[in-house]
Image (cartoon, rainbow, N blue to C red):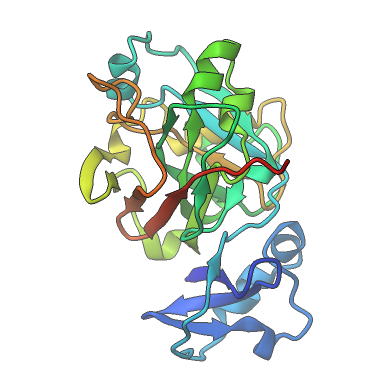
Length: 282
């Protein structure tokens, strides 16, 4: 099953994507909530799975699949080659940081360059959407707590990230987490430990990796994160990026207004985001 949210920004409604067609779930369930905590808590994922409607061809905007996740938890240095390209040691346990909810962006919406940081970079990542609350989840049980998977671009303002000597600000500018285009459930995606991830900028391949190269796999990540942190339905865990980011190239390559960034993961889909110049509100 492939869950989407479609419609104008701020007016999106939940749907299913089937062979390029969209099923409007509000026609079947007028009281269905938007995709998020209530959606998963109240069993709407299971109810949507029973809808047999083939859908309609629609040319409507697709929004981020989870508009307001309670937490966006990210992993740093979770691919050995990415750690190596940055000159970092391999972490002994999952290295966690967070992005704030204002970063959530649609799969085809612009990435607006911030005024407060240059050297804006891309990071294609497999993101996990949590479907059930849990704490101290064992690795063997971790998949029972997953609603599905999506693509996320962990956009990074490297100038702020390195100047601050920590990652919070540089990772949390508005729109710095494009995600989507859908949530794919585990029964459809198959083996998430063998998925190709790519990033292209203006059609040039920058990243080309495989989820099998993660240092810590998804069950291990969920077990580690949930040891002392309760995971809630609708939370996002983004599992790290392979080698090929722009800042560690020689010379560095950074995003500029007019670029188009495409982050893709096989069996899920692609984010295609134009890059736009920021504007001073004053």
